[in-house]
Image (cartoon, rainbow, N blue to C red; front, side, top):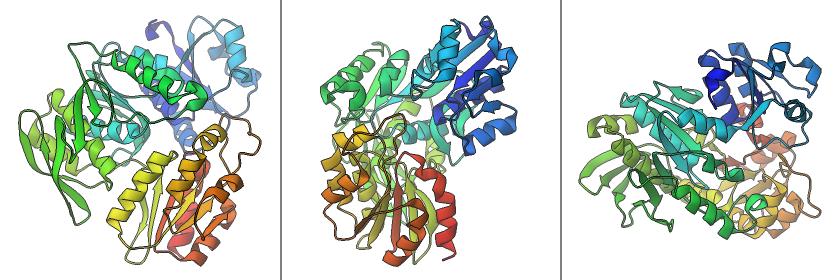
Length: 449
C-alpha cells in the first residue's frame, strides 16, 4: 500500500499519544487529516490548534464529506478502540481501507532505517533518549514517541527521513508489523495477559519480534532478557555497560564500556538506574548509526526527559512532588528504587491509579507488595480504559492487600486535602489512566499551600 494513493487520513482515537504523533506527521506532509476521539484533552487541543478537525461524538453524519470517499480516504485506528465503535463500523462496512496504527508505522518506516525500541517497560524513555541523541548529532531522523519530550515539547521529532525511531508496542502484537533494521528489547516481564493469556505466550511474541531483525542488522537486549543479541546493563557484565557509576549533585556520572572502547565521565540527569540502563542502550544504538563520541557526550547531558516519566512538578528543600506513568509492579519498583536513592530516609506518599481491571487482577499481589514499600498509600478507583468491570476487582479490594497502616481509598477532588494532612516531604503520583489530567491543578494547589 502506498500513502500517495490517499489524499485524506482519518484517525479513530486521534487523541491517543501514538495516534496524535501520526496525525501530526501526515498533516506536516500535506495530507488532509481529521479524526474522532471519545474525550477532549490537551493533545486534541493541540491538534485542533493546527487546523485538524476532531469529532467528540460518534455521529457519522458529522464527519466532513471529503472524508467519505472510499478511493482517497485511509482510516487509521488505534487498538484501544473496540470493534463496536460506531464510526469504525461505518468505515469498515462501507469498504474503506482501514489499518491499525502499527501498520501505518510499519509502512512509514519501510523506506527508512527503522530503529525499533521494544520491551514491556522503558520504551518511551529509551525512544526519546535515542531520538534526542540522533537529533543532536544531526542525523536525519523522524521519531514517533509514546510521550511528550521535555526537550521538544512534542511526541514527534522531525529532522529528515533517513532514520525512523519508533516504539515497538507488544500490545495486540503490534510490533510484529514492523521491519526493524536496528532494535532493542528493554524487558520482557508479564503484561497484557488479557491479550497473551500467559507470560510464555508474550515471550514467544518477543522472540518472533527478535527474528524480524536480519543477520546483517543488530539487536540489543537487556542483560536480563534471554534472547540472542548484544547485551547491555548497568554495573553488570555485558557488551555495553555503565560502570563506575557515581551520583554527583543529582546527576549520574559514569563510564560507558563498549566492545571496542570506554567513554569516560558521561553525565546523565534522569534519576533511576532503570533510566540509566535506557540511556546505555540508546547510546549503543546511536553509535551504531554513526553518531560520534563527542557529540553523544554533549547530547546526553542535555536530555531533559519525558512528561510523566519521573517528572518533577515541585522541587524545593521542604517538598518534592514527582509524577510518573508507572502502571505495572516492576515500574512501581523502579520508581521506588529511584526516589529512595535520591531522597534516602525521607517519608514518601504515593498516589496510585490502577489501570485496567485485568491488569489489577493479574498482578494484585505484586501491586500490593510494591505499594507497601511507601510510607503512605492513596488509591484512586481503577481506570477502565477499554474494559468492562470485573466482579470483585476494585481498588478497595486491592487496598486490603496492601500492608501499610497509612492507606486510603480517595476521590480525586479530595487529594489535596489528604496529601496536606499526611504532610510527607515526598509525593509521587503514578498511573497510566486519566490521573495525568489532574496533575496541573494538584501541582498548583500544593505549590501555594
